[in-house]
Image 1 (cartoon, rainbow, N blue to C red):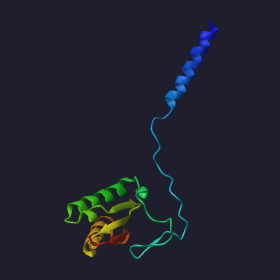
Image 2: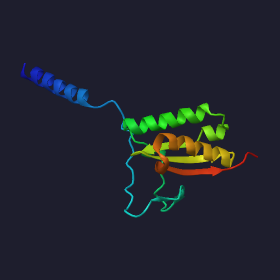
Image 3: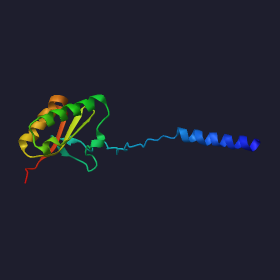
Image 4: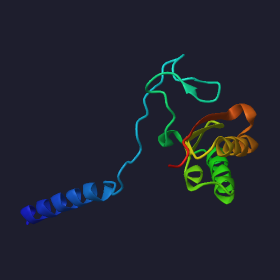
Length: 135
C-alpha cells in the first residue's frame, strides 16, 4: 500500500512539473550593445561602425513605433511606386525611422523619405535607401 502511494505521489510530481513547462519557443533575439559614439547615423544615411546598422529586429514593440511604421508602410504601398520601392525596410525605434532598401529612382527615394517625415518628423528619419535603376 505504501509503495502504491509513493508511486502516485511521484506521478503527480512529474505531472506538475510537465504542466508548468512552457510550450512556446522564445523567438526574441539578443541585440548587441552599441558602444557610445559608435553606430551613429549622419547626414541621412552615412552609417559608421560595422555592427551598428538598424535591422528589422530593432523594430520596437512600442505602440507608437508600430503605428508609425504601419502608417508609413500603408502610404508607401498606396502610392504609385515600383515594387522595389514598396518593399523597402521601414524600422521605427524610439521615434526614429530608418529606411533601407532599393528604389528604382532618386524620385522614389525622395518620395518615400517625405512620406516618412510626415509621420516621424523631419529630423527623425534616417534615409539609407539606395537608387538602383532596373536592368
